[in-house]
Length: 362
Ligand SMILES: Cc1ncc(COP(=O)(O)O)c(C=O)c1O
Image (tube, rainbow, N blue to C red):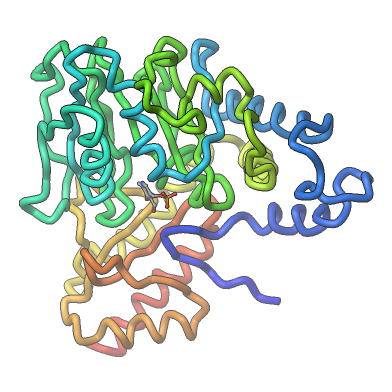
């Protein structure tokens, strides 16, 4: 079979080697005569899988020893509830400050407002989130329980290039659409979370990296399966977790390690994005949606100067094996999501198609 280049925002393409390994092992994991989804989450075989996932993640992301790795149900949006439930009570003010860079931050803020005082300190809504707004971290009041950002904005195609220094106030970052795509200093964050479905594996589960001192502050109403302390105390296995997703994540992490780790992947990702941004910047036919200084390396958003050509553009792309390039409805136009597993050849194929489409329609 020929695998398409899948530019969908998520669930997104996984490395072919990972899919093949999972396929080979699906019926018979490690000569057990059973597949991973058929064995207990408390078996010694699964124990090895979750331990190796932890170890690979610790190594690849450089997670310091005072942080815990949790595998939490419900994907990324569930963390929009879990984060305030777990830490908004750190201060009696029950206050959290959001820097809004797109719909995902707005949703997270609305969810937090159910449990405390959720404030917006800066937003780029006035320019349809085409940039990261100016924000002075020194302006944060000390009584904030946390400050919150979305590090990469999947819909709008922007990202924080560097992160605000919030001092003693824990910085929480939704990194769903870029985790492990660039090097990071985990110490800058109190909590990082990411749904698996872009750079890590299947949808439905989130990985949460939390500094240990932030555990143990959950509001009394917190359901135990959203209480990060319960996850930390039980190695994320207080109930039957999504064992298959954790297994898939271990394969993706091993692949990332084999590819030379996050530093190599970051260089590759920058070069991949450049290939597409160059086509946009060299033409009046395509218009980049994000301000150049704030561009994402994972989600390249653009419009056609003549929007009437968009349907033909998307149809032709599909005929060339370039799948799911339609932009999100709130931004319009096109979006190429080029996560870690998108090969350079996929970006080149898109750039070639864009150049050809421009030639034949100018
Ligand atoms: C940045 C970001 N946050 C949250 C989500 C929501 O993820 P989930 O569907 O796992 O709740 C997405 C999904 O696309 C996302 O891109």
